[in-house]
Length: 197
Image 1 (tube, rainbow, N blue to C red):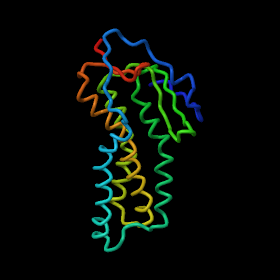
Image 2 (image 1 turned 120 degrees about the horizontal axis):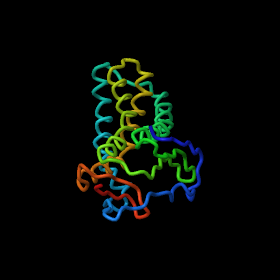
Image 3 (image 1 turned 120 degrees about the vertical axis):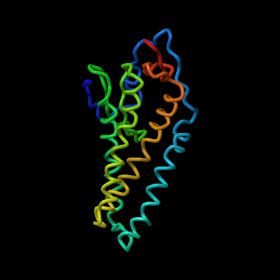
Image 4 (image 1 turned 90 degrees about the vertical axis):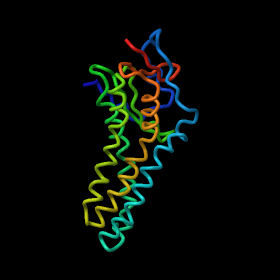
């Protein structure tokens, strides 16, 4: 298990963000699209549409609007609070003995997980996709529940939990396109790179 260090509130210029392993000589820069946060929204659209489509479907099963509207904001808040768990789930598959930082940059309203250690391609994909369970679990509960209050909490949590990892989905897409199966991925001063040992 990696060594997880909870940094808490962090400044954007904290030295941890400059911590990188030496870039291997044979490393190739992973090409990520410019404005990747914007481009990644493409990967959010299917999950957004699925969540929206489930409301009338669920309403037809229940015979009425399936959520108590007053509890929807609570679900949104809980979904946002799960961002910390999102980063913790990113940390768990990191290599043994790797140093992993988790914290919050308030000025950017951004939770983060930072690890400089190289990671196998398969573990990188697992690490990137693991936080999606924070959307899948509430979605399953929403589908199975007939309680309008519980539905009103679970549906927005599912939406936030499935849409917020869209940059991670983009990273996985690019890794699948560019990186060989036996390669490692790591952070560098020039962005993410991959190499074969």
